[in-house]
Length: 147
Image (cartoon, rainbow, N blue to C red):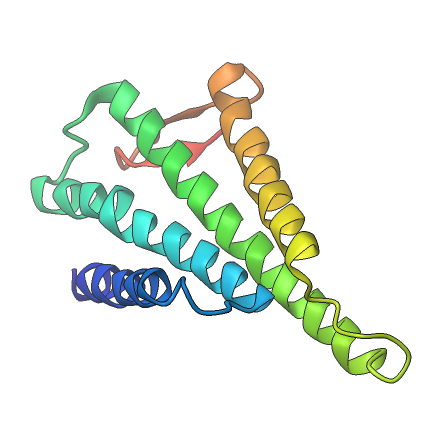
């Protein structure tokens, strides 16, 4: 529960700080940081509290539809965070290894396209079980799982 509260507070602070300084020139990597903060904020604000409720009630109280929505949100937001970390790592690798031959690989257009691609990629793979390719459902412990 502490991680959930701290995640909401600190990711909210990052989002608020970037929002308050939007009139200044924002660097391209800041967009990556903002997007990952939004993803983590949403994760801490919606599906994690549902998991906490499930823990205290010893069963899943929101039915199969709630279970599927919870699993979808967890999978989507986790995949977004992972793809963002991959993008940051690739960008840093390219900047370090090719910095003598080319300028920064973090320009705004590439970052925005990467963010858009990351969210679309994550959404497609997260919505697939809802459309019949595999499935989300409640397991033996009454918690979500991807079958």
